[in-house]
Length: 322
Ligand SMILES: *[C@@H]1O[C@H](CO)[C@@H](O)[C@H](O)[C@H]1NC(C)=O
Ligand SMILES: *[C@@H]1O[C@H](CO)[C@@H](O)[C@H](O)[C@H]1NC(C)=O
Image (cartoon, rainbow, N blue to C red; front, side, top):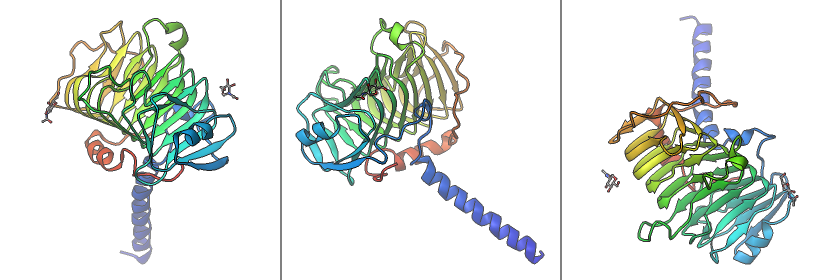
């Protein structure tokens, strides 16, 4: 081997190693999916930074439309009502144990909001842990949503619900666990006028663990659902209804009663490269038209999903700002 060949070999080896390392870092700290469209999602980047430790201070810090970063320090106990978040806001948990219990966030008629590194738990009905209503460009990243299965299925509301024409949302690297009605996209069969053509949402690298259903349930909208780990889902996992189009690729479904459903008022799904363990795919799936999405993304192989998601989903993993 000539020296130059050896040298080139070394260079390409180190580039290859750097690419692998970068890819890991990029893949769990970068925004992909529908929230990159429509001008992108930057939250409160460049704005004021406030740290809050009480519910009153949290409520007041997240209001208003000027860019702001609100750092939640510790677990703040809610009052069961919504905490309404204004435009151009990043809500981030500090360190490994920060968030809200007993209440939840809502973005209503808003835009450009990021939720990251939050532990969110046990919000009593009718308040969701996060609700996105008539809002655009939202990124929900690296949070842990936890309830319990001891109560009736309607005791808590959704962990992450979107409705009334919400659009351009990315849900990445979250853990959704111990809950009945996990993530509802499209709140009613009767809101097609508001929701058709909207409710475009990407779910990737989330871990749905010990949940009953709605991972997600999507009406009217468009769902790109890739590289998620569905682990013990007692009823239906992805429920595509009312004409919703879903592209479901390179996920792992383990011990799921009904991985993909399209029977309620005619939803559609294309599924490819998924791993199905201890579960059976419906033979009567209605195949839809969503075979590609209007943004660049890279999927992990389905065989790599369990390792990636169990290592890197949830709060306490990525504690810095995007
Ligand atoms: C927040 O953004 C929405 C969507 O662009 C806009 O309709 C609304 O007026 C904004 N709110 C404020 C207080 O600026
Ligand atoms: C599979 O899920 C069911 C609930 O649907 C649960 O009771 C059971 O323990 C799970 N099996 C395993 C092997 O985890």
